[in-house]
Image (cartoon, rainbow over all chains, first blue to last red; front, side, top):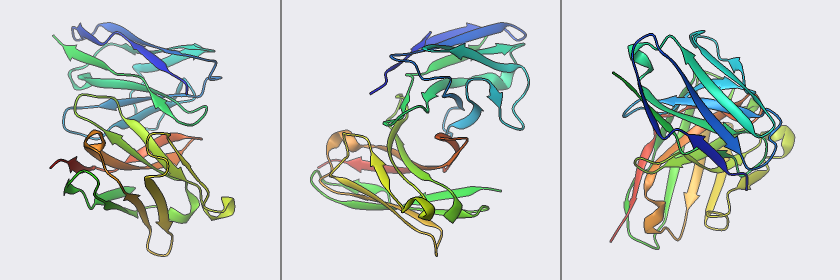
Length: 107
Length: 120
């Protein structure tokens, strides 16, 4: 199985800040990585696929990058509605696996 | 609008069985791979199983922890996805989601989930 190590576990940011969440795969996943946002009490929302391609409707302040085993999600210009837990997921091979999540708090 | 509505969750004793359903609407269900995913409180989602569409013979894949106990199936005439869960254990307690695959094996749309509690 491919293990996904996500960091940090939590972070706190002010409105307008830039934050970066990282995800490391235990083997090369060839950019087959997605990102999800989950707000309290809700289902996960799909944000991005193939490392950096945003879904329609996702604000452009979200961006992704990476290759091989190292990937990141960056939010530039944090907004109050970005408070949530973010998960990465490798789409390279089954069993498909998720990172353990990063909880973003807005100060 | 894509809608996925899970049902069938509830309280079941260890060793018991449960069948979950996921009613799909807003898209051509038969054209897409579908998955079941679960999430325990405060934990990351855990992918359980997916089923391919008819052109790929409805073949299935499972994560090792449920293989042999859970069975995924689909009814394209009714636009429903199923998960038959047998020999349930306390550690199977979670919210169970169905999800529609797009962009390869990403989970593009999720239902609202149904809670399964395994306890005596």
